[in-house]
Image (cartoon, rainbow, N blue to C red; front, top):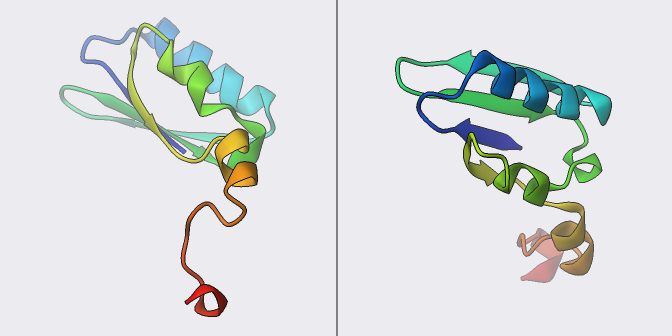
Amino acid sequence: MIIVLRAGATEEDVRQIEETIKGNGLTAHISRGVERTIIGAIGDERKLDADAFEGCRSSRRCSGSSPRSSSSAGNSGKRTPSSR
């Protein structure tokens, strides 16, 4: 899962998101750019709810599958050799 923070996100914002990620058993990879910070959640992202980060005041967007979308779609809509 990748979380893109808004320009001007504070260190406290980054720390809170990092703690949420780590609290769910994943590793946070933080990449600080000139204008934005991007946080990658490394591990079993099914343990995280992407919607939880959408409401964060510093979060601009979040990409990755949430537990609901991956379980309800079966294979998350991905084509596999057997599904052609």
